[in-house]
Length: 274
Image (cartoon, rainbow, N blue to C red; front, side):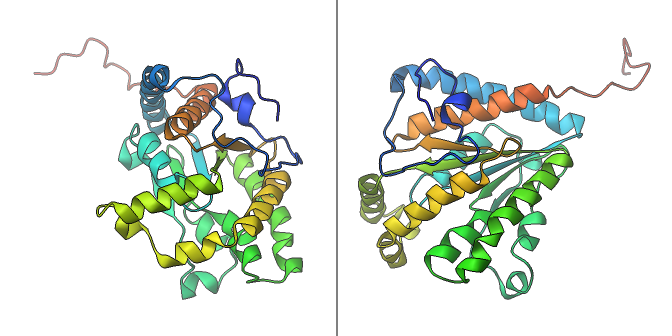
């Protein structure tokens, strides 16, 4: 991953297929020469672009877009969804959060519940966590034998290829924060009565597995970033940089799809309504 400040975020943050990422050396606080105050009008312009593009995709109803967000606890998945989805019409933007599987979900293969949530034509769907938990929490907590969870890499690649072949554009974002930033964000939740509900003692238990999750994240990125469904590794210590990067990448990708409003019914030009 070559970081040149003049590049657009899409090229700057894209993980090449098979690329080995060392998250311990990754600068989660990188800003690439951008400035927070200067970023605000750029973000606003990106969100305006997104609003227009989503309206056209919804009207055209020919393709679907799936945005996948992954990251350790407090990486900013909820905040990213709030900003990006805030630019969209809610009726065309289903958001799905994946929690512990229900008994019914657990009785099926791991992609069953995920496939059911894939956006339909005209929709831009957002996943808060996703099918990738099957190679993350399942790995870290030994919920399946290694021989089983390793097999999921290929199953995921094949499934995402199938979706792409069916006209689904897949964008995957890994929001990277360092351990100190997570500590600060946890502390802010504990200290703020309006955010305390978001913190659970189990979060501290998971924090002890930081190194194990890091190894799982690194292998996930290397094994499942493909040309048709790339991962973007987003430095997320700074919320403003995270929002700027994700909004730009999504807008540039949707722009390339060149969605068009459908042709209107014949005879409407010049029609006077009485």
